[in-house]
Amino acid sequence: VALVAHSAPQLHWRVLDECSLNIAMPLPDSAQRKVILRRHAKTRLVPPPPSPFEETLVRQMHGYAAADVCALVDEARMISIASRGYQPTASVQGSAHLIETQGQRITDEHWLSALRAVRPSGLLDLAVEKELYGQTRWADVGGLD
Image (tube, rainbow, N blue to C red):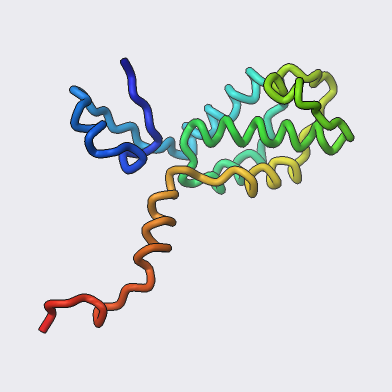
């Protein structure tokens, strides 16, 4: 049995205690994100971003887990399909990756729109922590007298 999560805080501590082995997988660096992006684009029959733009895109994906990068490719693909006027029906949405992609062109704007839509899960804990505790001041902490 394998239990996978983007980060340990996503799991309840009792679940972590029941696991006999915990392996921490760090978030991919920019070179690894680039490989993931290219490989997933290839499996989805999506042309990868042009080289100069690809470098910029990969640098902007700080905090993206491998699943986030895959979601980015899928989102860019769907944005491209929607921009051509195709709206999937409810029966097609589950298998949207099978939609015809011959001659498909994903522009830089499609990639940037996907980047705005898919948020990095690796930075979620930091964002939640700042939102919950960001307004705390030293004067609010008791016992400093």
